[in-house]
Image 1: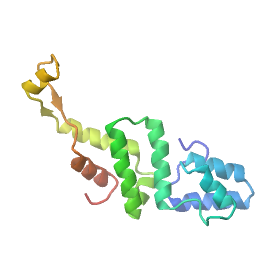
Image 2: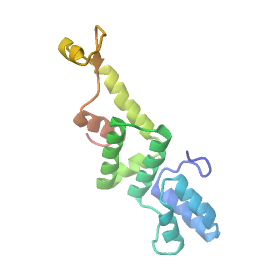
Image 3: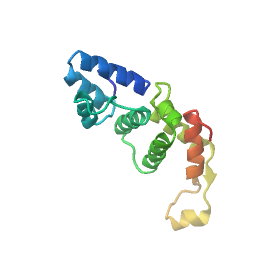
Image 4: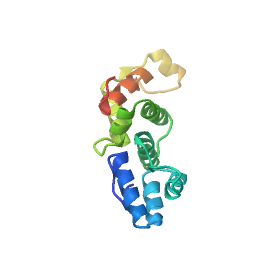
Length: 162
């Protein structure tokens, strides 16, 4: 993840590097940098051809980082739902998108915050449910947050109001 060009903390950093690479005539590196940052090659091509003034904005930079991180983490099931919420918040709130792109925050750290909450808030599952599930354990607990609580944890992690 971010091996060749390093992790960039903002759309402005990405755009500055894209401009430098373009001015040097190094379009191959420009395309590689876009890909490393989760940006579509089509955006890089459009930038190179002068169709768009910048390779990304805060929202697309955040979405790109999330895509790269999600691929690395190989998210499944509920974690994909959480990521979907984060992506939606990036589209709605530019400051949130900037926080997501920040080097200080990561999708791994956000999911870890949800996991930490989950372990701290486990509740016992009733015997009738355990029996209906066909589980033979004497005691079962579960601590998966509801979507409202998960949203609160996500917003707090990335530094926004819940």
